[in-house]
Image (tube, rainbow over all chains, first blue to last red; front, side):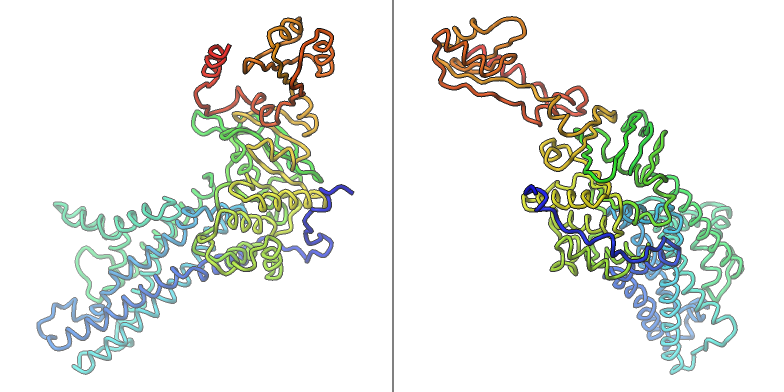
Amino acid sequence: MSTATMNVVEVPSQVARPQRRDVSFPRVVKSEWIKFATLRSSWLTLFGAVAAMVVIALVIAGSIGSKWSTLAPADAAPSGVLQGYFLAQLLIGVLGVLFVSAEYGTGMIRSTLAAVPRRIPVVLAKALVFGGIALAAMVTASVTGFLGAEGLLSQYHHGVSLGDPGVLRVVVGTGAFLAMVGLLGAVLGWIVRSTAGGIAGLVGILIVVPVILGVMPGTWGKTVAEYLPAGAGSAFTNSVHTTYMLSPWAGFAVLLAWVLGGLLAAAALVKRRDA
Amino acid sequence: MIEAHNLTKEYGDKTAVNDLSFTVRPGIVTGFLGPNGAGKSTTMRMIVGLDSPTSGTVTVNGRRYADHPAPLHEVGVLLEARAIHTGRSAENHLRAMAATTGIGRRRVEEVIDLVGLREVASKRAGAFSLGMGQRLGIASALLGDPDTIMLDEPVNGLDPEGILWIRNLLKGLAAEGRTVFVSSHLMSEMAVTAEHLIVVGRGRLIRDMSVADFIDSASTKSVHVRTPQAAQLRSLLLRDGVSVSSSDRDELDITGLSSDTIGKQAADAGIVLYELSPVQASLEQAFMELTKDEVEYRAADTQSLTTDHQELAA
């Protein structure tokens, strides 16, 4: 025997290998759940978004209770205390971008797509895992913030309950809106494959473009803005209905169409492009 | 078993891989050798479906990689660029990879021990040294206990102990009957690791032969002589089929004659020799000779400098 063969590393024998399983969608979902759960940054950002909703709701309630008679109708409405959504949408949206773009940034995507070369299950599993987590966290945050705020306001006898007409739709709708913004972030992550680009795109679509459309002369800009994600969201997250606003369910349908259409486009691109 | 048929990949008007056909057989380590930019990484990415070929096909164990129901059990791959999220621990990275294919926790622990990452398994992969990162990549590749293992430049950045470890690991995997395909731009590394070589340059196949044949065919032998009577010996030996060059006043490099013949003729002519030694061209030189027209990026020619130097010395 030569010395070369004596140095050979012992590799666990193939004889004893356990039963082999195939790639399946539930397994890809489990993998994506492990990926989300094992990054500290996931939980920190998610916590930030929840805290934004709850803390800002309490701060608003604490400051408006004593000057109720001077408030504009929109501020006194049930959705008035949920204005933390403005900060929370950025946090949850960035988290959605990162859940995808960080895989491209670190090269992890090559490991991911080598394990699941059909690729489409990865896009769907990421959406399912992230959408589920975001929906649970954001609805919880919205309901908690609302109940806390109304608890404070009831001391001034201005509180409303979740059971009052249209209130549940606004409170749960705000949570659902935030989850869908998170999914739009993930879609942007797939499309632009970079964290900076994804965040810029998200801020552009959510904030910059609606503002620009709003200051356009005439009414066309405002009409178009109704159908953008932010405009469609405001239709079911506001208690007070204004002009240039879709009906609540139409707004919900439009935003859902953005998310589903985006995922479809993302899946098509991921399938076609080299990784 | 990996089979490539007329594999071609174009990026715009640049052809990274050009009509490449080869077969990687089980049971031996096959080296994939070529200068930087020769298309090795692109070829490997096409094998596991990360890049799609412009034309041609490549199959693993008789099927397109993506058509296997459990790809991790077919091919374990280490790609050149790191393919690991830096914020996740080694163990969690492997758990996430394993989950896609229903590979259990026990196998995850097994490969961690196998590559020697036990002590740092719960540390963030971003804090790993290059060598530890390579070991984690290899752990990933072995996760599915695959019949084919493909590693892109696995010894890059490793210390000597790590290099030896990889060599022995690869030989061990091949000895178990697996297909082992390893790329490198270092001929010397392939010479001690691989049994078979697929040499590429600028995306084209240059050689597909055993390492032993490669060494035989590529080595040009010469004889180095040091003598105070260099001019005399040169005129004695020069004839058809023999070439003599000189790098110093009393040194000659002779090709076309054996050292025995040179020694005998020098003795007959009464020429004193201080040194007479056969020189075998290094594998690295042989490799460079073979790929000299296929190197994509080359430093400015240094030949003219040495020529000037020789003239000064003469």
